[in-house]
Length: 447
Image (cartoon, rainbow, N blue to C red; front, side):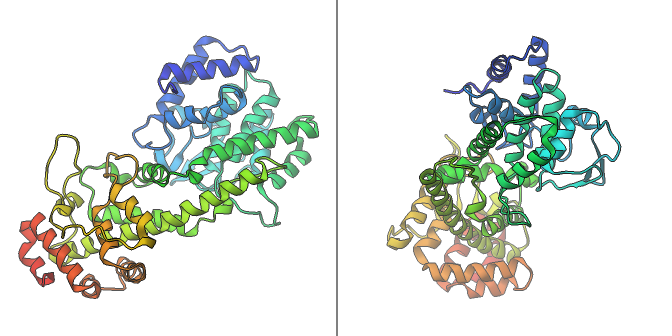
């Protein structure tokens, strides 16, 4: 069992330095472990946490272990800027103004490690950095160079930074049609980063980076769809700060799921995993792609049904008085030893007669993801109810109408009129029971 404590993190860092023959003062190792643990434990982090970096560490590979510790230490959009300790380390490298981060034009070009980072990431002085295009990974590599550079051999630091660069996610071929590994290999061979690395060393370096990057996104191919969705749900509050508030509204939650659904709709499974000269072996790579493709497709269906459920609740709320905290309509999340009412308590009794082709999704909705999370419960009773009473084709058609409503192209009352009357009446009746202050207004949607 992994040790996720601050002591366990410091021990892994110390072991990695020792394995690389680096003589690092114990005080520096302690301060490094404290810094990484503190940043990864920020309130804004729900997925990129100490557990994530420790799980990604490899006790048998100190390069990967140190890459794991530092690869997410900068997460600009999640942390809503730079924490004070990180800002101090980056103050001579970047400028920040109006939420724009740029590499400084004038800085110490004699710093070999930082110049190597520019070559590895293919960035230029003065360049504006994109939070979704390498900002976090590049600056995480800079932090690594600042902290580890004084103690590591340049070649070891270089390989750590290559591993970190490899974690920039979801990249297809570049403008010249080159894969990530092809483009990076050309940059290294042309620039050399001041190092005389053999072809074999470069090959092993890139293979290690492939292994590291693929492990970082390994959950995409998880055979357990519930476990895959667990991590998806952990990401939601990192990019939707409103979900950290207990009384987030129906629209808040719907907008969060909309963003996640758009992400999956645009995601190509082929951009998730990397390969380079037989790493990973072809049969394993094919299995990873197939697993990722399956999970991405199921996630799109899952999120679509969830969005349709929310659309019905949102339309009923807006038609009866306006947006409100979601727990007013759905009820509080049930925890052990609590028994407060929930919307599903007042829905028609389940028939359990789900169509065979929908059985996987129905099981996922009724049984839920593997874990509850602080802002949401793991199962989706209203969505499961929709699976019982609607065919897949009807769900898809109504979801398109829901999206038109979200975009302001369709009135929420007209959306409700487009629902099967029995379905609309059943949900409206349950909502009227949950929210008696809206009962009179909701009668308009009850047969």
